[in-house]
Each structure stands twice: as structure tokens, then as C-alpha cells.
Image (cartoon, rainbow, N blue to C red):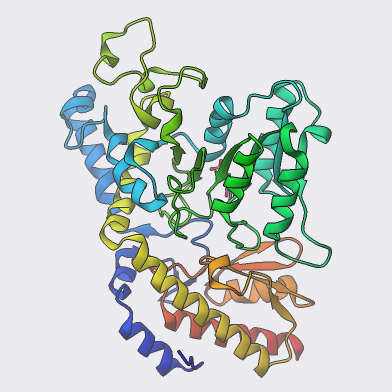
Length: 427
Ligand SMILES: Cc1ncc(COP(=O)(O)O)c(C=O)c1O
């Protein structure tokens, strides 16, 4: 499609957009009486209007039923978390029994490492990407130290080439081969938080298995953003947060995937609690743990239903729309944003550079823009003028036009504000 950087054209795209009505189902912060242009759904998704109703329902049940709400609430609390599996399984390409919701992301990665990082003999190394999200770095390093190893030798980082922004699959595969039987675990971010690069998860998972390692993925930036087929790719485990593309609210619960081949396997250890105990027998308060079927066996505590409520509200929307429709719009709106950026680049003397891969299959919703020489001042200008984006050191703004609620007109208007900001700076 031949794009045009005009308001009329952007409006035409909005008129053709099958998801345009969903914009009205989210609450936007306001700037001078108008919706902001919201680019940070990769950090914290907007609040679905339905979220409050789901939370209120629990508050009302709590007020009216108190402890009896566990069994007699509109949506009983004792099995509240079970409402997620089937719907989330569609989002991440898994079987319902392979998916559960609990805790938060870093906590879950730690718990999953109890099961899948069990260094033994010479097989003790973890392969991850350089400059992984800091929480992942701390998590991996502390796990390695917990097992008595020095992170220096036990953590092997995949590097980018000098002067390049993105990882090359061949380098990842070569590193996996090189570490070989010393590798206990490959654990990488499926979508890089800084650049938005989507890694070839299926190929990398296969390579990890070929050397006898477990392969897990941090899908914080992938869930609700890109097509995932975790079962088909034979991924061992994965976890993601829900407050980004899944619009569940600040700091909210994490989803986990545990491949069915590990369910009910006695030689896969895990930290256990009563919510992972067989649900038929949970309240018999037996001394011996009997695991629930599937990923639910990894549950530990009773579910924080007030937190889960907005997640469920949001998930209903994913169920209604489906990932294919979101991805179709995502591809178009990201391509349009990229086009607008290039047009503005031609119109003004700017020096920004899109560091996200240009190929559609190597990126999701996020475009990361390196502001050579423009920097923080321009970021501040955008924020002051109703564009919510975020800043990542040393000089990057990340733009994520979330298909659920961003419009093509937003992309056009953003281009105009960006242009003004660059012109004003050069005065
Ligand atoms: C890639 C990645 N990993 C881990 C985290 C940490 O998530 P949490 O604070 O929910 O543990 C984040 C948070 O933004 C993230 O983006």
C-alpha cells in the first residue's frame, strides 16, 4: 500500500480499521482536553473500561459474602485463576493445561529456574543475551551464585556485532553450539525490550535442545504483541508479565507456560504450595502434596483475585478480537509509523535512526528510535505536547502503537509534533 503523510489519509486508514471501535473501550490520559498519543503500551497498557467492573464485582462479593466469596462469589475465588488458562493459551500458542497465572514475572522466572536450572557436573552454564533487561540479569546472576558458581564463568552472553543494534540468529546458534554440553539453560528475552527485535524462538529452542539444554523465554514484550506458538516450538518454559500489551494494570500478575512433557514428572522439582495441590483435595488439608494437573501444579499461594480481575477483563477482549486481527493491524500501523518517521526525516534536518529491524517478521509493535544529537530535549518536548513515550539510556525513545487503542491519526499527529519539536530545537 502506498502511504501518505496526510491527515486525510490517516483518517481513511482509521475508517478502514476493523478494530477502531476498541479505542473507545480504553481510558486515555488527557492532554489539553484530548486523548494523549500513547506509545507506552509496551511498558504499561491503558486501562480497559471494563476493568473497573471486574474489580467492583469482587469488592461487592467481598462486602456481601466475606469468606464465603471463595465458593459463592459471582466468580468464585478459589478457582478464579483457572479462568485464564484457555484464553491465555490462545494468546501464546499453547494447550490450556500448559498455561497458568500466578505471582509476578521475575518471581516466576526464579521459580521456573528451580525446575529448569539444575546445574550438574560440567553442565552448569546459562546462555542469555547481552544487556538483557536488568531484572533478568540480576535473576540469572543470583541463581548462578545460589548454586555456588561464579557468574563470570557460568553466564555466557550472546553479543551483537560492533556497530550493530540487533542480534544475528547465526551468532546465537554458534554460541549455543560452542558452549555445547556445558550449557544447562538457554534463557533469553523473546522480544528485546530495548530494540523491539523478535528473535527466532523456534530455531533457537531447537538448537538449545540439540546440545541437551533446557530452553526458556522471557516473553514480557512478546505476550499480546506477536504470534507465539510455544507448544509447537517445543519451548520448555516461558513467563511474561501482563501489564504491558495485556493491559492488566500496574505490576500485575505473570503468566507462565510449562511444556506438558514436564507435567507430573517426578524428576522435575519445583517449590510447592497449597494452590498447586490437587484441587479436589486442596481443602482436605492433607500432609502430602498431590500436584494438580498441568502448569497449575506450579501454583503456590491462593490467587490475588483483586489483582487478577482487571487482567481477566482485558483477556476477554483478547478472546473477542484474537491475536490474528491484532497482528494484522499491528503490521499496518507500525509500517505507517515507520513511514511517517521517514517522511519527517526528509522534511527536517534530523538525525534520528530507527534501530528496530525493518523486516516485519523481526519486529512486533515497538519501534525504537535512536535520537542522535537530538536527545532528551526532544523527548521532553514530545511529553509536554501530549505524546507519551519513554526514554531509555543513552538516547532512545521507544514507540509502541498498540493495535487495540492507537489510531492511524495518532501516527500522523505524532509526526507533526515531532517535526515541530525538531524545528523548534534548531531555531
Ligand atoms: C523483559 C523484562 N523482563 C523482566 C521484567 C521485570 O518484570 P517484573 O517487575 O514484573 O518482575 C520486565 C519489566 O518491564 C521486562 O521488560
